[in-house]
Amino acid sequence: MVRGLTAAALAFPLLTAAAPAVAEPASGRQAVDLPVVQAIEALPVEKESRAGYKRSKFRHWVDTDRDGCNTRQEVLIEEATEEPRVGPGCSLTDGEWFSYYDAKTTDNPRGLDIDHMVPLAEAWDSGASAWDAKKRERYANDLDSPRSLVAVTARENRQKADKDPAGWWVPAASASCQYLSDWVATKTRWQLALDQAEKNALGKRAAACPNTRVKTDIAR
Image 1: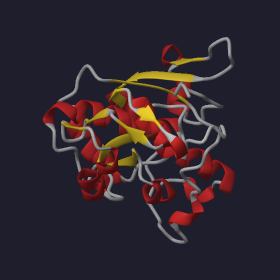
Image 2: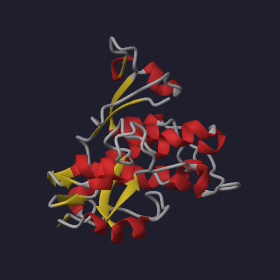
Image 3: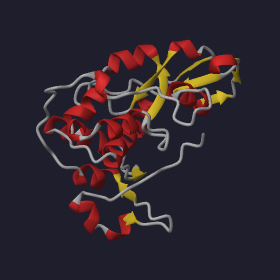
């Protein structure tokens, strides 16, 4: 499965006003391309609420294309730096992976988690509580954007847990600008809000990433 980009209507007024940064390709899909500072400013700032959240409200690790490999396995296959052998039940062997959060390489897929760039609980807090179950499922299994889901060491995924950038940041210095861009792109793609502490943390990180851009399409 190729992890391309899908899109729908853009809802942020600031992005809509920035005509050079928002393009509508021939496919009709709307794309965003902004310096990271502008992309952060374009996101709405709202108070968060976790009322009613349950992880089970985001159906995840489904086999959307019915090829025998679920979302977790699809990400592992596509992010492998050395192609694995795919066996019965989509078992993976003989591959190699790079966890960009901590700059570690492994040949053991069982030591990797698939991280939702913006954790499910954080997405709920930031606007997904208003979505229907189908949209939450699309979010939890978003193979159409390579930023949404990422294979990383289980240790770092569990350190991050459901924290936003005000509470956790990637330990590898070389990963900082990529993580910044990936986080902002995912919030932009899914039209999720920031809280004030999160926005402040992103702004501080952005100061060290002057050439970083956010490129994504808007999901449905």
